[in-house]
Image (cartoon, rainbow, N blue to C red):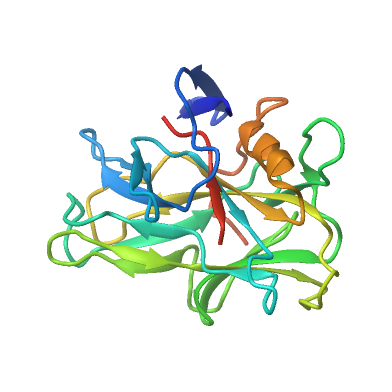
Length: 254
């Protein structure tokens, strides 16, 4: 079983600290993020497995696998966001995804060998998170580039009059802009982001994390998920400044 963790960000240092809790995480599952509004008015996320109907009350680190489709090995229809019906989000407001740098990196990488240690992504690798071809963000180690017109976040859905929403964005990974088979280096790719609620009253979420698996076995992928942000505390840089720039696994569930 993987370690369960919750995420706390201190306002003074904007440093990420994880606190370990007791319980069991989901070893494997098709989990969507379940956004809701806390009593304090902040966006928080649980998780829901739409195949097993399993729910978890807190989901901070999620995992997804490239390679599920042999004909399109480097594109998946995840992450998903599902309120599972009516919610406290204001009807007609939107949910946006905005990337965050972790230790100065917008996209980090571990090759799966030895102890988990995320570092620079191999040169030439980029990862797109897209709601549509014109609404997307492109992540690499040193840059986060939003498509023209996307501003500084990616719109991923509009809440209904009752505050419900169920949507998926598409994740695609590239090497030198191409997706030829066996070209993207095998390994785990770490992406961090926050959720925003333009047009609504919910405040921005704490940082959330996705560990994408490209070609590693599930045990190694699980170790990568469980290690976020270990082995060392990860500092989130630039939080106060504008950013210039399917088979799914879930862990860190409480």
